[in-house]
Image (cartoon, rainbow, N blue to C red; front, side, top):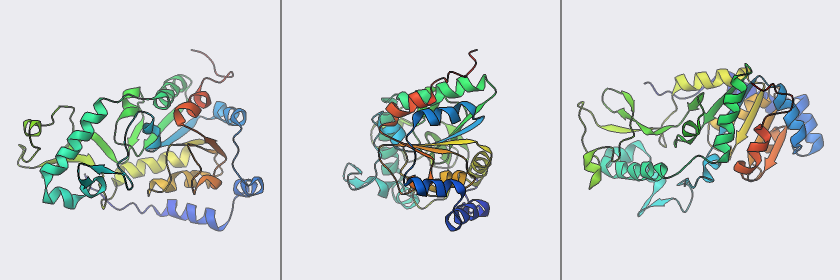
Length: 291
């Protein structure tokens, strides 16, 4: 697997043009001063959408009790969690980093998908029978979308339950607990295959998988409705995804506990826990054919 810097010129150009020359949609939003929170209006658009892209962030899993390990309170034992999620930290002390990720894996095994995950999965399954498509692009590494039943998922930051060999680069699913016998007592130091396994996640200072990002960009270019769920829109390049869609005059609906710096660019904003706001938004519309 080759990890390359994401420099999709088209995406950046579209966002730049959106900022330089406001579209009709953006001018309308400026006149309104804020996005709409009219659920009935959103539901009418949802009922007609054929290709829906749902972008999710940490807020989508927060209601499942998943800690973000970000900010001033993001400590694990005596270490700042963000300082452990780096290639340098793994190079210095792979055992310590693996202990941290072992803890996170064990924690996730005790969590369950919340109503937001379930609503997305049920929507995907229902709409697929109507010849419509729902794609999930997630920044989360917890696999809660998968456990809820979603099938079409792009995990742009990787997964807690995959490993990658530092030698041969082979990626494999791994749900063992502990991930290796050494972790039962002190941590993981050596593996077979003449290489040390590492978590298959994107650490601070690393770039995202260019192949995945190319596929994601294709989805963003063809979707006719975009939902932004539980993300602060500050982590790049994911922060550019929804503005790219909005730049095409495609409706974007943000579901979050608060407004973000990107909120003003979108058609809709539904404030509150996504486990509460998302299920009624994605429920079967009266115009849908029941199979």
